[in-house]
Each structure stands twice: as C-alpha cells, then as structure tokens.
Length: 328
Image (cartoon, rainbow, N blue to C red; front, side):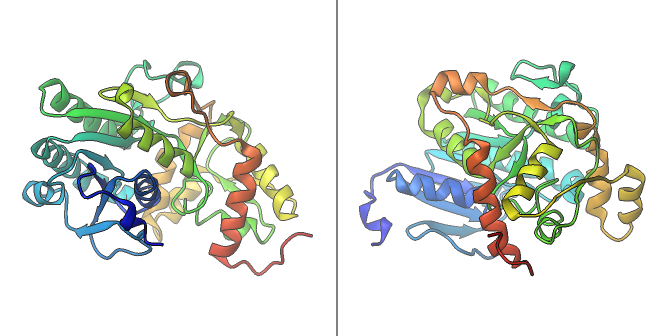
C-alpha cells in the first residue's frame, strides 16, 4: 500500500538534505511517522521511499537552498562532501544550509562528527569536551559548527547538532574502516586493514541508530537547540569487532595495521587514502563516545553488537556479492 495515502496534506514538512548513507534512512522513518518528507540532493535519486517528494539542487547556493527548503518545519542536514573536497566545499555548503533553513523558519538538525575534539583527554568525548582539533579536517568541522552555532545565537534559526562516530552497518560503504575496502577482503577471509592500533577501544556508530537518533532530535522538543552525542554500544577494540565479524562469516579474520607512510604512498593513486592517513590518530589511542546525555534524556540506547554484526554481514554479503558461500 502506498504510504503517501496515509499522510495528511497539512502534516509538517520535514526536508532531508543528502541521499547518501543516512539521508534515505531518516526519510523512511519520518514517512513512517506520518510526516510529509522531501529529499534534496545534487544529481539523480535512487531507491527513494514511496511517498517522498524529491528535489535536485545545490544547497551551497543560497538562492537554490531557499527554494529547496521552502515550507520546511524541520531540515535534516546529512550532506557530507568527499574528504578531498572539504577545503573548497564544506563551508559554502554549511552557509547555504543555514541560510536556507533560516529563510524557511525551520529547525535545523545537523549531523556532525567528532573531529573537532581532536585527542580528547582520556580518550573519552562528552558534549562538554573542549574544541581542540589536531587535523585540518577537524579545524574545518570546528569552523562549520561555530558558524551554525553563531547563527543560532543571533536568533536566525533553531539548531540541534547530533554527533556520531565512525559508521558501521548496512549501507556504510564509505566508512573509514568497515566500508568498501574492508568487506570484500573480510568476506574472502583476508585481513581487515586498520590505519592505527587495532587494540585501542573505539566507538562505532550503527547507521540505523544514527537515523533513529536524528529523527528523535527533529521531533522531540527537548532536543531543540542542544548538542547531542548519538547512541553507541560499548566501545570495542577494532580487533574485537573484526573477530566477531570473522565468527559470523565463518572465517578467521585478522587485523592488519597499515602504516601512514603506506597510505600516503597509495594516495598517489587514490587521494582519499592520504586523507585517511591524517585521521589515523583516532585509532592510536582510546576514542570513546559518551552518549549518556542522549540516553538519559530520551530513554533510547544503541543497537547491541550481537544484532549489529549479523545484520551488517547479511547486508555485506548481498551488496558485495562475495565469491564465498555462507557459513554453515
């Protein structure tokens, strides 16, 4: 049955910017709740949930952004340019999003990461951690957040920021560890690559949990104008995660450390690897996300690892069409 038939024409309009790893999941959840939903991206759309309105355009253009977000009650910013484009595109994109949401009179819910904290004391990050980036990309994310917060403080718009760690889960093809480079190797029994110490605890954000949490931030008034760390399950070491994946696929899966100089060398052929090398500090020490504020406020936690691993492996088997049979 067409979900659009169950949506009242006067229902608030929620606009989702971005159709990558998170945006479509957010749109589907909003649709299930009976909201009108519009998705915005540059270029063509694929696999859009039935009942979702689509518009194509460049939100870094303030005039286009105003039209793309017209009528929105809530705007979800899940847009993230490729690492290699951040110096040129990140700040114009943020300014366009803020401008468009402000002109619409919308509540802006923006997905963010943890780069602006740098090497947090003790390796544990709360919402009150100092902003102390130790990378160029961290400096850019800090600048982007500061501009959004300044707009909120001027009264231009309501702003809620949700910060997540590195992604894992169905559709997380661009994940720093558990993405396109990892799964074809893992499903063939080859070692998983890590650009750091695989025995340091590291928080990973399950993509369905990220989408669920963003919807909470956009629909629960207690979230408005706050900064929230999105739910994560217990921080495991990357080796522990790989071991669990290996048990699920029926293979002995080892962790292989890739030195930064190797990544930079390979960057001649794939520039994204050079960008990843800059962020390797996150795997050389504990990198733990504290989600206490979110859990205690909304009573919602993360999906447990015992569900995350099998669901992600099942997706990966189908997505990457491995040349190995399912484990008995």
